[in-house]
Length: 256
Image 1 (cartoon, rainbow, N blue to C red):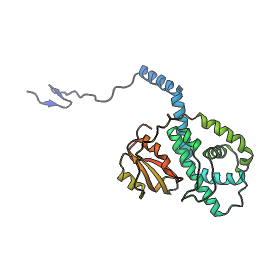
Image 2 (cartoon, rainbow, N blue to C red):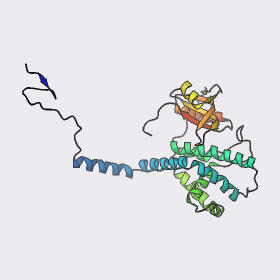
Image 3 (tube, rainbow, N blue to C red):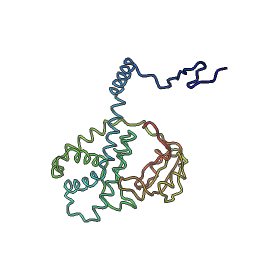
Image 4 (cartoon, one colour):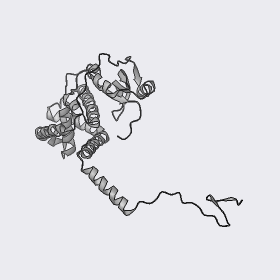
């Protein structure tokens, strides 16, 4: 019997090798894919999610500049230029918390959370200062569009109205179901984000954060609730009791 030659062909002195490369797409296949892509881009689902993700990306990229600019904008809008450094720090903490809620709400397409959320006094934000998320969104639009911070005060009112109108266009999620009588309460420990991920793998965790990094990502926090079911944690937002909170998923999220 002749030997097995290279490429898996039995026989004579010259061997034939197989081509295992993927077949090349034909022109008709490319045209079909291009048409399918264009149809997808025309759908309201694509436009809404694309706009939402672009807003999230812009907010993350410009977070630090927006945060500093928002404080200065507030001083112009509310004549707070005589504020002490301590008052400015408290105001900045409130704005940072609101940015977190906006980023979370945009990412999940739930405009109601933005509409209803207020920055409230807590252990971390000991201040009577309250700023609605709508006002923060207005400031976001102001800073993005205004040529200089000096024009913010004059431009405030119409931009606030436009921002609220834009906010109402965000696709809202389905109404939240009522929380079950047994809340998935955590043990109240203060843990690092790495410890939280190790202790509650592939779960949704409601965290009252105590320390953030420069990108407003959680470093340490108190676990208020945890569950494998996302909706249960959404329903547990009532547990926050005035504390600035965030929801963290400790597994891998694909196809976002």
